Length: 184
Length: 184
View 1 (cartoon, rainbow over the protein chains, first blue to last red):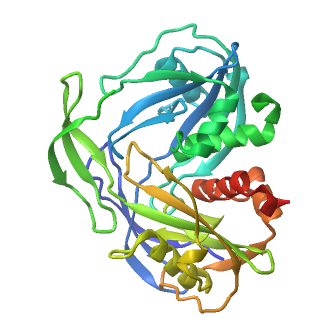
View 2: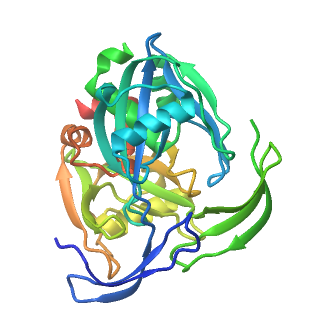
């Protein structure tokens, strides 16, 4: 099985907030397609953050793309000029007011979010023994309510649909499969 | 916590293959934002398909958005004028040559795929006791290699990263949590 050959790339983004590229590609069977569209969204980082009091830190937030209020794990896009871990640390501090260090981020794996339509890859971390030792620093579009639950409850919420954002489910279940003792 | 009020909606899609809407919205705090962009991608259906020989049916396929060859579960967008289950049955038949009935589709849950940037919701099903009783009917852009593994192996592949498309991971783990006996 082979990858497609890119013959031409055109930026057709309707906005800098929503990048879209158009590719003309040659398939291994020789077919030329001139209308393959996808969004180069890049990397997202997400953290299963657990405090010293054994609370999982969730964020409840309105997401206008879907038009729903969702409970998710702290996450955000990788920032320009920052590593994945640096970006994860920034998100933790800005979204929920927790400052910690890169040493405390355990990498749990990554996922392709929507490989037909985007380049988006989410990188999952686990961080333990955290404290609310800093301040939230939210953007004007962000209205975040922090929700604290036990690890057992967080896992239950992925099963019963209370947590239904796909990345949040995977972050919690990846932690469960690697470190089941956390959820006992 | 409140939803945002939509003041104006403009279609700024660069192509019918990549719909993008621009919203002017009013936030609960009164702020007006005139540049919220998202993609109304709609519904996707996915099936954890298990044969009478106890094989999970996976599809190996090049995905040009991400630019990678991935192993995933059969899935596709909901088709116009079709229910979710009808769309799932069509995908199963067209992608892997398995014909079954709606009665045999067990709903496992749904996920929001990327609620900041899309409306995309994936609906997960489990289907058992299947047979390869029909023909693949692929589009010119599709080159699908069918991979058959045991349920235990499929679960292992979600843990070790061989299966790293986020929806496929969730479909398998949702089945595992609801029907662990399948994976023993």
